[in-house]
Image 1 (tube, helix red, strand yellow):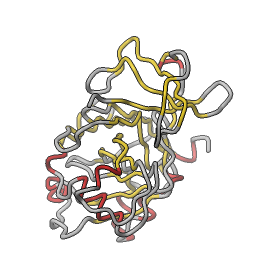
Image 2 (cartoon, one colour; image 1 turned 45 degrees about the vertical axis):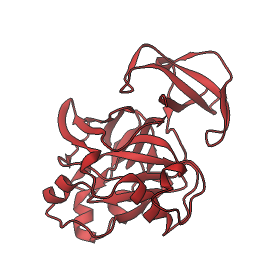
Image 3 (tube, one colour; image 1 turned 180 degrees about the horizontal axis):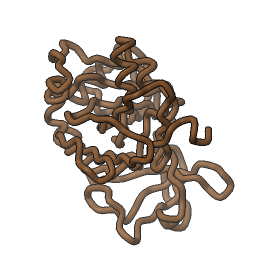
Length: 271
């Protein structure tokens, strides 16, 4: 199956437009002729081309989906668990992030006052394609629409002081996703990277996951019903580190593309 990529962009009227992405290479990196073709239909059903090409460089991309919730998975790379001094978990360590944490490509990550360490976490994210409850691991991938990049931003000091993830990962703008959803991708051995100001900080492969994608989808679906557009962010490789205002962080996943976000202090940024 050839790869298809779908994005959403902000129209001149301020309405989100679903579009198919063309003119990118095998890793999702745009070429000079990269463009968006508006789509008619439902991303979770049938879509067809319905308009003229729009240059990718001429629009503002939105988050590619609007999840009702984002499920994060902690300590799911062997190297990262070792980096953080954690034992290999016996079951996936899941937590829930609010939809209000989601921000799209080029959106600002707003560091909250009071936190002295906010970290980047480059991740592969699963996009759910249909209502999913109590699915088996064998059938789980049939419920997946595709994959996107995620930066599971974390106020590390709050995580350590609170001993739980809710505040540390729940701030507005702490869940950048994008730039688009890639459909038809095999997630078993993808390179996941993270850069800060052009410096490579994270470089891992999904083959190092402790719990693979089918296991995660099945596990989460036995806890809560997943809805179309919901996200499961699958964990981060080793190399997580702090972000400062003024920096630019990029998450890249093989076959998907690159998600770029700036970092600002929340009090200095517009709401």
